[in-house]
Image (cartoon, rainbow, N blue to C red):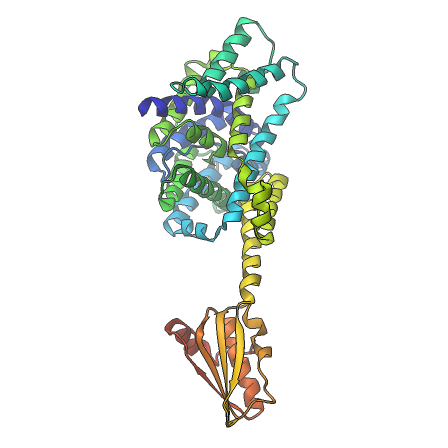
Length: 476
């Protein structure tokens, strides 16, 4: 329903303003740079993105990546980095980088969601320290309103009513509390396109390239993880390749309009989805209304108490956390390795405040645990012919670098008869390490004057073994 999409977009736009200003401060640029980025990112990604209802805007992760460059070299180099980073994202998207998402384990995804919830909550804590005492009942009242109002009516999103009610209360009662306007001045005009103010030389490219690569990778990882999360929440599928390319296009446009760049904004996306938004209209509306609110209603928006937005984000944090994943019954059934991966992902994200680093570390940990588990699935059993002239070794399981390490030690080179058959009917060769291990087995038998015959290779294994056997110096 269009009304739901538009009203949800309005709530998101209101929540974007203080966030964008905060991230501008982190990046060391004027608040308008973050607000312009949020406007252009949301509007462009609404058209070019692959995940409907997902919100892209200026984010903390991107701000952290570009902050050192902006601090040391100025806004012009930051803008150039955003444009180059967008070009890299388009190239990576076209190359199929989104397919790497299949290697992210479920335990990492759960850790990602829980860490996200923790970060959203932690981001609100500074707003509750060293503030007038009235802020606390305001936050509590807003939370109560958002929890109980939906039981009466869902015609208008509860967060929007909560924001309006607290704003009216603080203005009517003349309460001196922190407001959106305290974060910085809102822009009074639309952004104007232009080129970054940098020399177009090889030295400039050399300077910004490392930042642009980091920008592109962090932005894509957060965006793809968020898209997958929304897929799960809405039981729908989205094009991750289109989303990757769309993120790049949005950042290129954002750069030319003087914005600091961005990616999928997880907290605001959760607000949007939880309010019932499911289409691109909500994302487009959020971007357009963000600028309308800043330019047309700037004085009023500046009076919105931060307590209202803090309450919205606290409720989003609570709703985002996967409470089932930490329930005692779940933890008792879950393998220790899965729990460990989830905990490591959460810990790394919380410590670094970087969701991308947490996902990489968690995924690598999960792969190591998987490799160790699968390595023990390769078995070798021997059957000696009654006449004692031949022994047949049946190898079962997956042969790759981890499991093949123990393969060489599973044969009786000195005690076996002259003819040795290695049957790989129930095995599969995955890599060069396994071929090298089989070569080492043959070489050891040859040293004792035995002959080895390898049989039962399936077609992919036979191709790999035929191409590499005898070509890998140094054995295994």
